[in-house]
Amino acid sequence: MSNKKRIGVLVSGGGTNLQALIDAQARGELTSGEIAVVVASKPGVFALERAAKAGIEGIVVERKSFSDKASFEAKLLEELSNRQIDILILAGFMLVLSDDFVKQFPDRIINVHPALIPSFCGDGFYGLHVHERALEYGVKVTGATVHFVNEVTDGGAIILQKAVEIPEGISAEDLQQKVMKEAEHILLPKAAELLCAGKVKRDGRRVMIYE
Ligand code: GRF
Image (cartoon, rainbow, N blue to C red; front, side, top):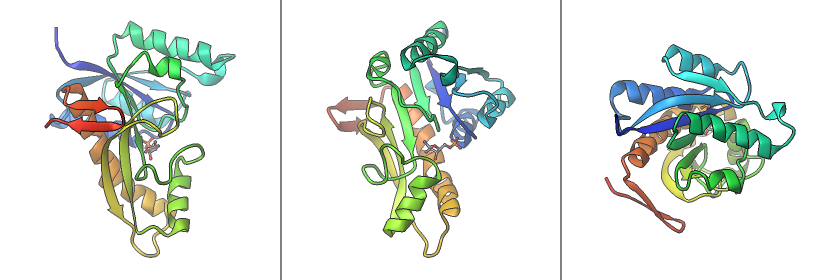
């Protein structure tokens, strides 16, 4: 049996970060883990098409099919356990997971956020809003962060960050694309490989990378 970690990628949208993971796997840059399943929080999202095209199983566990968060998470956990998933990657997953759920995967859930945490993060900072707020504030540098997931939105310990300069006059839409291309799509596969290879260790909020 392969000793690769089995990765579950949780998505809610277009899935460009999922695509970056698929491409890294195809290029041989994600070798310590393999994407075993893509779970979408709603049907019809383009990320599922990306998974299908790459020959990866895609399933839907829809929040609104369940009366409460606990039963939704129980179903999610069941689907992941059935597939012996070791590592969870949130790649544009729009729901906040409960503490109880997160405890099932200690230091084994990561998320990518399109800003340099602790700036422009937390509740309400998602999608284009993050970049609009960065432009409104007038920061000259933004970037992306890959962090462990805990029960606080964007609150877990930081694994990797990459800065992106903000050109004068850029639109929020163009900044979003720039941050994805120059930071998110590079950092997420890198963090996934490091985590699957056992090269990421956490001591409280401080994360050490053993490359
Ligand atoms: C990305 O900006 C990611 O950082 C954030 O949600 C967005 C998802 O985009 N968490 P995509 O679905 O990966 O294209």
